[in-house]
Image (cartoon, rainbow, N blue to C red; front, side):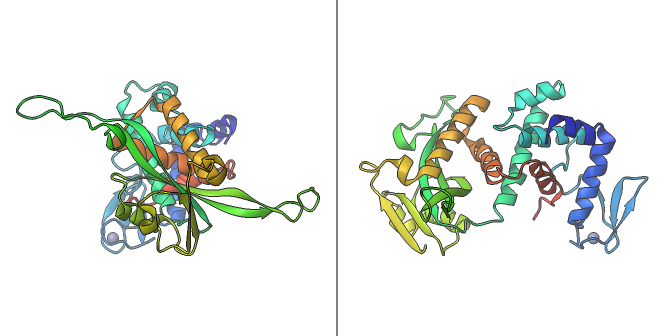
Length: 315
Ligand SMILES: [Zn+2]
């Protein structure tokens, strides 16, 4: 959504709150206690829902991404807008500056909550077209813990298993398209990226890769990957597994969409967030994938995010 449209539709706190309520009710208000759906009265004076079945009362924010947040609705809406309308993303520091809030921490926490609901939405879907997979190591910051008796910081491991390199399994589905009859290449097909998932795999063992892949990829699709020891076991349940030795093949040609996603996400994280802590890397990848998977949605992506925001978070 363009800034001018955003400020026209959501000029103040009241307009943002009204839209949030409208969206929450359009998606169905679910009682937190007895899970009855759409069985409520809205108590205007208290600004609460009251369940007709069990009498439980809930605030407008209760059970949504905004639960326990003291930030105004308008701040959340500005975050939804800037996180979806910018081509890359916005840092928490920049958002704090734009909003003009004195404290950084609530803005930072708000953005991470938004990234979590983004992943909840994407996790509802499996990749259903042929998939490229690739593993990559992301540089992350790791806060060393001090020994409680000696006060010495724990040692970092070196190399592949280093605590400053976090392994990510990248899964990119692709679809075949035919060239138009009007071009010279008519009749020939080409591949196009479809959807993307990126998941941190802590140890990179075949059982961990297998369970991550099974949660995210439909078993009826073919998988293409580089030659790694763990893969034949990890991907054996899929329709077909093709492995390529990357010392002889160019990864950019064999696994173009996953290679692209790795390069772009690394550049973005480095440029916008200046290195991230290991435990938050998955959240940044969630945001990257959410936007990638909706890259053709245009202005609709803002309202799609609003749906994620009002959807009960306990499901
Ligand atoms: Zn109830």
